[in-house]
Length: 265
Ligand SMILES: [Zn+2]
Image (cartoon, rainbow, N blue to C red; front, side, top):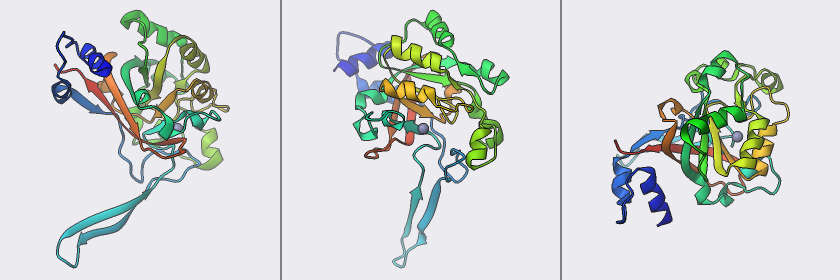
């Protein structure tokens, strides 16, 4: 019931009667924030690409059509989820992350202008508080989404990550924006949010050598989403996020299907 009331308030439909949740959700606009997975999907330079091999495709001996494939993937490539155990020993692995942490009101912070001028841009605490000065305090359980604008480079790996090299050489050449350790510390100290996501390969910027932002956020029990898309279609406030990772037992990360729900017009 608590969740129904929350959704009703979110959609501006609160009344004394029980809100009609199915109708609300059916008339809402759903936006997919997930990239396709295929052999061209962006993975870390030290990782292998997504594999999707045909087991069978065609007409069987008995005359009916049948298709089946098998896939293999690194946990941390494409649109994916980071569990707290990714950088924090003893932190929750995916199956232990409570369902309540897999959804929440979206806080969309647009840093696309800064990131278009600087591939190594680090989102500051000031960028976060600027959002609050326009939209109010970040609500408890929020999901902060950083729109860097790099999602538009997804099919151009050089522009998206800064390099086409593989292995350690590629890692050294990564250039894309991320969240600063300073802003991460501010968020974990001052606000209670469920997750932080963005449209680049990592929450730490490409040139990070020590993954401080990952370490700060996971130590506080936060989860992260990386390689998101369609953030350009979201309002600064008012969307609701549902992010469901594949439930890999003991997993530090996994492919993620993530959607934004916008109130009915
Ligand atoms: Zn990851």
